[in-house]
Length: 274
Image (cartoon, rainbow, N blue to C red; front, side, top):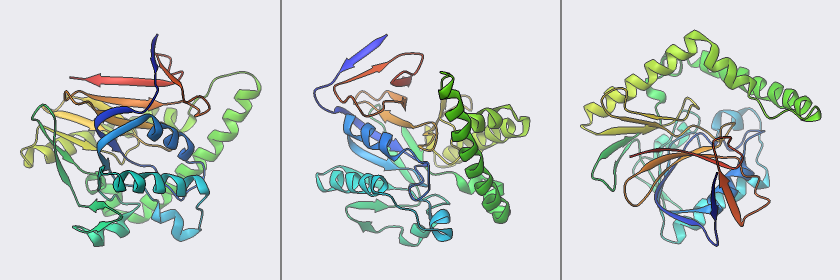
């Protein structure tokens, strides 16, 4: 077991966050706030679907915890942290503002991140490479509603598991990974993003969209997906020596003095890459 006792935030070079979906019920805003208290980055990339405009159009939902996340990010910008926002399909209303700044946050269609080791990474949300989103928007909207229903069922299901002392288990994630077509879809998505990165003469790609955190070199360059803050609560961090890691945050926020990391994901799990 690895243990880190922290008297302050851990300083890292770059932080990548995607698919927070503020404005929808059941999101992990409290965990994200706790995570942001533990990590201090020089640059933060918001890799799309930070605010869920689709859901806000159908019904307003904006609790204090969601507002606290926005305020936390804006405070970081005021303190000199560089924030770069790459909109996704759920916050596509921001795509009319490429090249502008608001509250110290830069809005861009894509970005090239220069790693500490000299490697160049294309930063992009990734929805443009999802045929369901680009060619059948009605199906994407229907799928979004179905996903929310699955998450609601998941909360009820895990409520019963807690009664019997069983650990958390994601019904929706299990279904996504078990369905053959979904597995093929993820593979095709990853390959398409890797190909796009090669077109930009980049050494890797950092994206979001599919809510599946990953980091590998299967397509001849580094593919990194930030995951989400709907279920997985994952982020990508770059250290000052150029190492990337996927951090899965399961800390409740009740104890801010220590964070434990082990293979059982009791508090904070790291997947690292050189």
